[in-house]
Amino acid sequence: MKMFSNVPNWRSHGLSRKRGFLSARAFALAGGFLLPFCSVARAQQASPPVVVQPGAPGQPSRKLPSSTTAKLPPLSQKDVEFMQGMIMHHAQAVEMTALIPSHTENTELRTLGARISRSQADEIKFMKRWLASRGEPVSMPMPAMAGMDMAHHSMPLMPGMLTAEQMEALRKARDAEFDRLFLTGMIQHHGGALTMVKDLFDTAGSGQDAELFNFASDVDSGQRAEIRIMQGMLETKTPEEKR
Image (tube, rainbow, N blue to C red; front, top):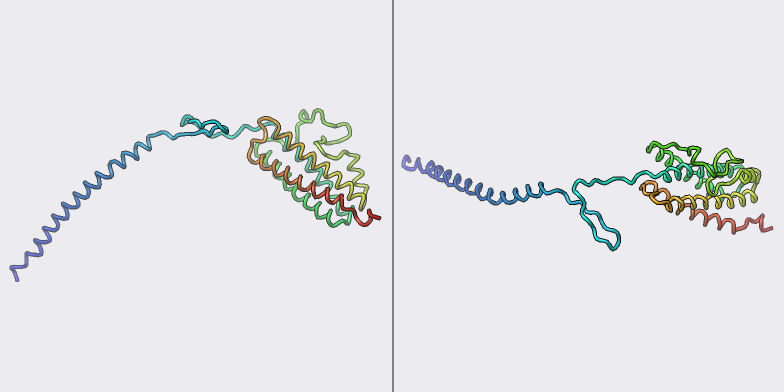
């Protein structure tokens, strides 16, 4: 029994040497494979980033210095005046819709008025937040109101806004007459908003702010749709008008 007592120890010793040799060889081989990858990684890290500016249609792109940083377009004064003016514009629309419950029983007009009132009240809140976040006043300073019709009104008239006489006639009207005056007045009012949006986008350097661009685009599409609805309502005479 003693003759074979050293065999396991010997085998264990030989295997340990062999394993040690294989481990060292594997380590050396692994190191040989890893070194090129490490060198590539270091080279990639050392390379400055490439900034590419897409060219205009038909023009090639060009590389910019690695120090180039993205910048938001500067705030245009026209952007600010558009928002300030549209707040006043929307406020009159909300005032007009507030007359509906006490002036007409027309359910279709009541539904439309509620829709206009909600959407424009929400948009007024958005415009006020937009101006406040940029440190701008909610209302226009007096110099920006130059040239506007201030003779008979406490607030400036933006495009399409109803005059004091039109608003007074709307307040005095009832039922079918109110419906007619409201629809024609709101079509005029919405048309003015479309003019304001067009003026914004026609002014160089204006309407570049992403939030403002999306808002103005929504105003344009939404009010065009409502104009078509109101024109259809005007063409559909009530039973009272048919008599």
